[in-house]
Image (cartoon, rainbow over all chains, first blue to last red; front, side, top):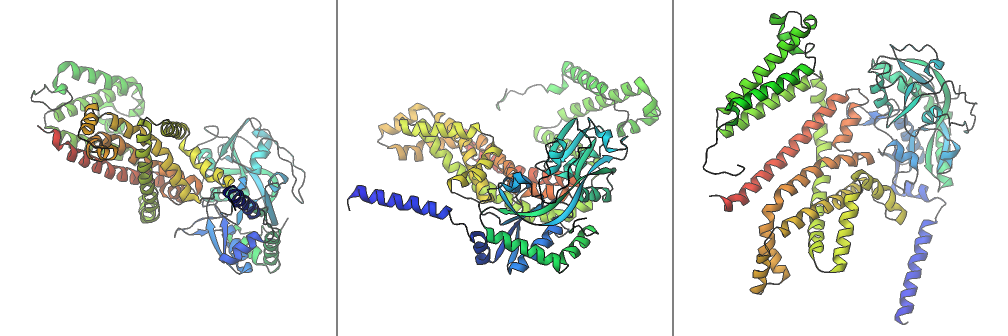
Length: 277
Length: 324
């Protein structure tokens, strides 16, 4: 073959192999997990009872135990990586990790980029105020400065853009309109600003009830004002492998059926948050 | 005069006009803040009575005592030779910083429990990321500096585009672009290589300008002389220009190295377990954030101080030729 034909042939082979490489769908993630015998799980290190570093600097928490249970069901080992909540929610994981934890609520906007398993956590969101706050009911927070974790449903609730579009969602009532919404990378930083006192940096923080309970247990001068809405949490995956999603959902279902999920929930929360109430 | 010569100047702090102006400045500054509530007000209790209720008399008394102590301090320091002056002032500033941190009421047992882990996991990762970035950045920089000085239009255009682009974006944004953006082209790097790549490219651009300044500081006569004895480009650079340019670039390059050490903390946004990430994640959930921040800050300072000592030794080694 002459030179031009050789160049065109090798170029077209390269292009075709690239497109073939990016269009393998069925079983891709599952095959990778089973081949490497490792399930890469994305968690956080400062999420309280969900996942945090213990005194020996190892990760432990509700999500950690659930992930280990799923890995056991698949017959592989669980390996934990800690990217950051905004990187998990953003999608486009590029195979850096296989599942994302953090009790992400499966809304329709998120479902455009991520696949969700069965729900493994049911919780509700509360508003927390300092103990010296004058607020007695949720409507007292109208016009208040409220802190919230970024890229969460709580943030959408405060901006009044939240629509309850997950399975089994009850209609949402906006119990107050915040004057200013301050977004923080994690709830702990918001609580550090809240503990300074009412109105110094924040009037209230909106977060899930377990983070609030952890802050109160750590003797932060805060109290829960009221419940805002309930939301479930599910495991997120990339939208490339249906077989993988079904396997993960089956793993959670088997953990629910044999009571492991309830036991894990009792261990970390003192209550069974793995069933809808 | 800012170079060593044989004229012995009068000690500045022993001149009356200087001393009175310093006294007046310190007095006004102390009067602006209400220092009665601090521990200094407690020390002054025998003189002014209950500090909180002593009003304007208390404030003036406290400000006066502070100003007098400061002026006596600097007058006494003026009497001792220069090396001792440096030592004494350093010790005083360190004691002031320690007193400042004492105000935070930190839990020392918690700090000591976590320091070994911070060092074995955090410091090792930080040093590894910084060292690799440093080497790569220097290599990129020397190539880019020579390209920016060349008369080849292609090389100059690429080098100037590179320095403009990578000095023009914030480093944090560069890290995110490389971590999240490169995968769109099919190149998927994990967190640590992305961080190293971003740091190398960004600091390569800054250091290219530093190296270019160093090379340009060499007199044109050196280039002409080396050409007249038949040296080509490579030989000139290796034997004549770079050995003379090296002492000139040591201070700014030392600056960049220390800066890389600190900017490696930005890799923590990708979840790499280096020093800043560990300080945040150990400190926040246990609500001992201040302890961890102060500890990590001290560790960074000690590492930077080691680099500073290395830099000053290197400078002294090359300054032998300029001693009289």
